[in-house]
Length: 211
View (cartoon, rainbow, N blue to C red):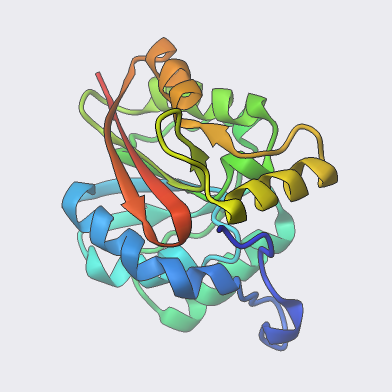
């Protein structure tokens, strides 16, 4: 089951750095997938970077990739900057405050990452993510999503059922998204679901490619 706690303030640094406990459990599994699918060079945008720990972990493994972290939260952007400063990894760019439903960029992207976002946001955010990818990704470029999803032909784990109910009790617009709905929305925006990869703790990696 995905972790519903984005970070634990008590475990953060003395100033801005936050800690998201789920990153310690999933970062190496995600990294293994990215090694297979991420381009060897170019600019990669992460939408909803949260604490910033994922990019902090990934960037040293892709020295010729520029990682652009982003989040709609000012607090998250401060945490991202704090992690990047501590790591001193040269290929992490300063975070940008981006709301995917209002996002515009004037730079060339070579891939987009989005980890554990679409279930803690309204469906309109997922729709906006695919629309953004259509506008900013060249042909064959990667859109990578990670998180808990529902599959029509796979029983949902009790943990994910409980997690979905918990999310919807917090906000009726939140909740686990079905892979079939994600695939259909992606197709509307010229993206193809290339791979569904089973991940630890009943999560999935969804690998989309721009046509």
